[in-house]
Image 1: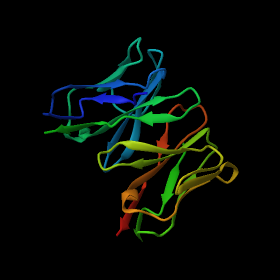
Image 2 (image 1 turned 90 degrees about the vertical axis):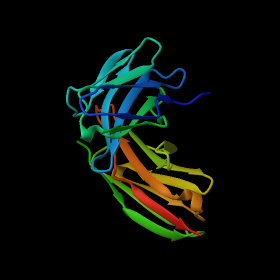
Image 3 (image 1 turned 90 degrees about the horizontal axis):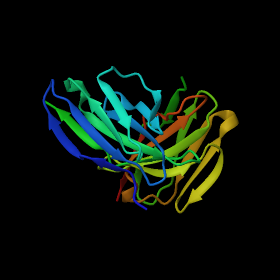
Length: 111
Length: 109
C-alpha cells in the first residue's frame, strides 16, 4: 500500500509570505504528525492530529498551524515566513500499534 | 521532558566492518524507533523496538528498557549504509517522538 505522501517536495518563498504543506497518510492511519528538521535544532515536533482534532502541540509560535480533514489528510500552514523557517518539514502517520512512518518531506527555502 | 543522547556522533568505517550505535534516554518510554535518513531526507524505518531484540538482515537492535538504552548493530557494513541514524522515543503522556541528534555513519569502500 502507498506510503505517506507529502506535497510539494520543494518550494521557495520570500520573507513575509505564507506557505501551506500537504500530507496524505497511509491508508487507514488516523493520526498525522508534523516535524521540522533544521541543521541547528535537529528534528522537532510541531503538532499531531487525530480524527480532525489537534491532540498534541510542540513549542512553536502561533505562525505555525495545521488541520486535518475527515479523510485524514493534513495540512500545515506557516504565516509571515522568516528566514529561520527554512527547513525540511516531515509528516508522519501512525499505525494503531504505535509505529510512525514518515513521508519524503517538503523542503522549504525562505529567501 | 525526556532527553535522548546518541553516540558516537560520527563514525567512519571500512566496508565490511561491524558497528554499534547507542541511544540513551532519560525516562521510561512507550515507543522507541530507529531510523536511517536517506540523502533525500526521508526517514526510513529500521526498527520499532520499545523493548527486546529484533533482527532484520545485517541489522539488529536491542532495547533494555529498565536500563534506558538501545543499541543498533550493523554487521558487514556496506557503502549504502552511509547516512544518519536516528533514535527516537515517545514516553509518558506525550504523543510525539523525541529525536536524538543522530549518528552520522560513513562507510568507505
